[in-house]
Length: 206
Image (tube, rainbow, N blue to C red; front, side, top):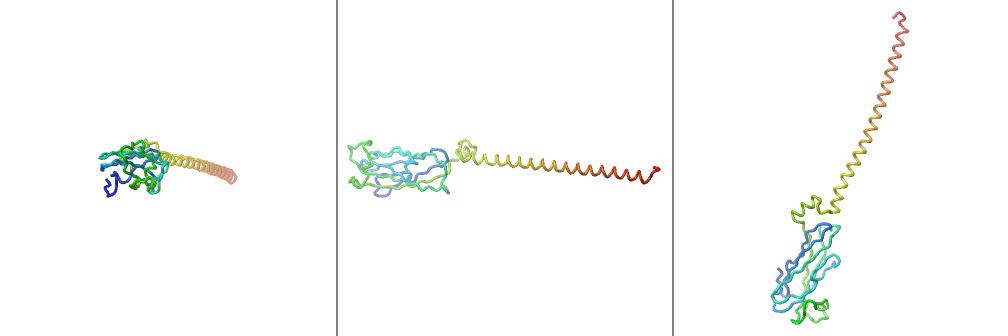
């Protein structure tokens, strides 16, 4: 948990870790801890707002309490190179008067013009390997991954094409050999008949 001086809210964990899988929504949880005697409002921002859904996006943490935030990453069709993610999150917090309700918290309360002292904590996103049970399901194809289906389908198609080509050439070779055999047999028959005629002429008393 982050405990640096000057931070209004403790944040756990200090980075968002997603067990990455293709074509699947993935969620992780942030826990905000208010150890002060003041009411602290917060707002969560990200560099990729279309990619993530944050609930709640902004709210209030009462004194000496905790609040959970669920961050959901939308299903991704492609994996980034080397599973490295450049997305970042920013958690802004500011002390609010006790009469302000959670539903009254807005983004304007965290700007420089608001007059509030705003604390900011940056969080990075890390992609991790799925758990062992999820990995087994992925290897069996139970998750219906598009990439997995394509990878398993292509070898089967290629093997089928190769077998058909091989069969075609084998049949051609067979026909060619049969043709050669026919010519050889015909030649042998002709040679036998010719030699028999020669023997009959040279030996009239035979």
